[in-house]
Length: 88
Image (tube, rainbow, N blue to C red; front, side):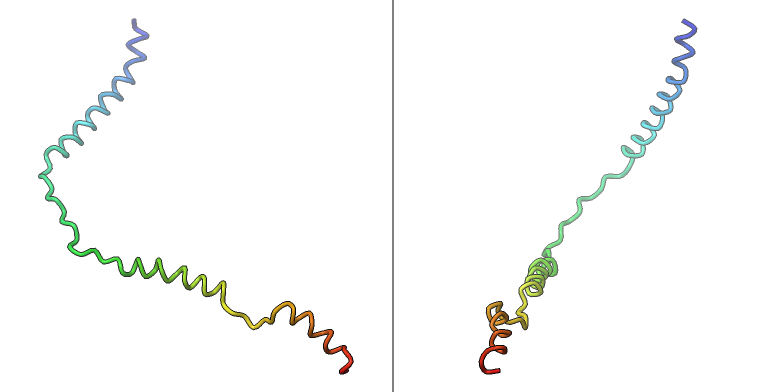
C-alpha cells in the first residue's frame, strides 16, 4: 500500500497542476466579453491576383516559345554543300 501511495504522489501533483492550469484558462475564456461578428469586405478585389495568375504563365510561354534567329535544320544542312558545289 505504501508503494502505491509513493508511486502515485508525483502523478497526483501533475494532475492537480494540469487541472489548475485548465480551469485558469477556462475562467479567462468564459469571463471574456463576447466578440462582435466581423463584417466581410463589401467588394472583394481580386484584380491583382487574377492579373498575376494570367500574366505569369503568358510571360513564361513567351520566353519558352520565342522566335529565334536559327534557320531550319534543312537549310543548315544544305548550306555547307552548296558552298562546296560547282559554283566554287
